[in-house]
Image 1 (cartoon, rainbow, N blue to C red):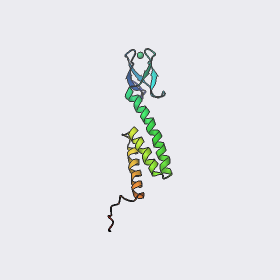
Image 2 (image 1 turned 45 degrees about the vertical axis):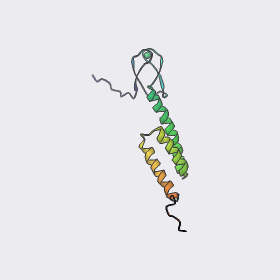
Image 3 (image 1 turned 90 degrees about the vertical axis):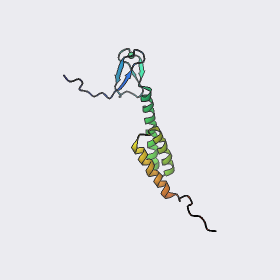
Image 4 (image 1 turned 30 degrees about the horizontal axis):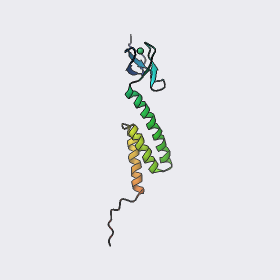
Length: 119
Ligand SMILES: [Zn+2]
């Protein structure tokens, strides 16, 4: 017999009320679920909840950055990407896009006065 045919995407957690181990499907709205053992409302681990919160924050900033980039508003894009990267520092897409936008900004702005004026 196979141990399990389904591959739960649930988060391992422990119920704070009854102390039993939980594996809750992640299909529910993020953050909370009901303990199958005692029926109390449990939260995913704090890190998990925080990660979900910052991921959705990152997604919002990422969306704004996309709009700003589409409008070639590089300043706004840079700001939004910085926020997105802050919220989700491990996201390579954010880092790459941020670098791209910074290059755009640099190519548009005159370099910091390198040349000295001859008087
Ligand atoms: Zn419980």
